[in-house]
Image (cartoon, rainbow, N blue to C red; front, side, top):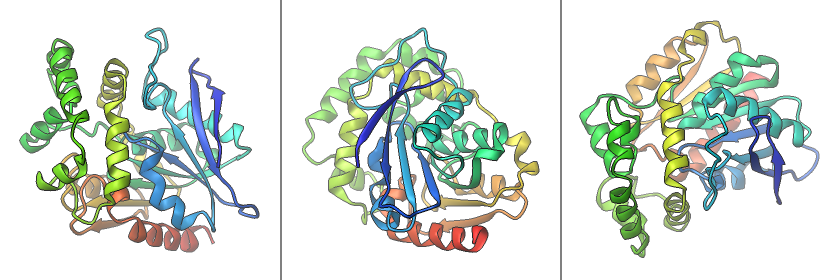
Length: 294
């Protein structure tokens, strides 16, 4: 596996990683979430790379240590177009789009704008529209993780307190085992792989705050729900029973609008389902694709 940098049509460079052991005809394109780098897909890649070509990419400017020029327009539609650039660079005409969190919005936007590039959609812990709600529980956690900019009326609040946000990030960087704290706060399932999730948290803490906020705002205003009823592609949705960011009820409502979509609600799982239950996710995705795509 090698990380490759390419230019995208939105004017920014993007990094992708291709796992291809040869002889695999089906490609899985994995779209991550806010602050979720390629590490989100570690378990799924390990378990499915012998059956599929797996293509993972980091959103422009959202990899650890990167930033995005203010002059580059950023929206979910642009991310969907950029995902086509990644497919082209990897020599894939079409792919199964696997999205987590924000990546679900990108997946449905691509299915809306370029259905000929999409074989199927696997939507994990996300919806086709803004993931942020007025739910008090969601607001509390979003505030703790620096996501307040996406909640109604709070964009200015977060922007005006960038110094406080950075102070919290600096404090968290000194925590030796951040996943253990996440477990104590009941933010993740106890089964989660601590080493991988620790690395993912440290990547999150290395993100450029202004670029991150721009992604939050882009997610907050995007809405592809009007097209759900016209989707003719196979769709599998997975929800975490204890997901406090995207409640399972919202995933159920979305799935109900898509013809012949399938839904699995994972007991005990949180928003970090791909980290917590990679074996179950891999088994479910593999079975779904075998049945629906042949």
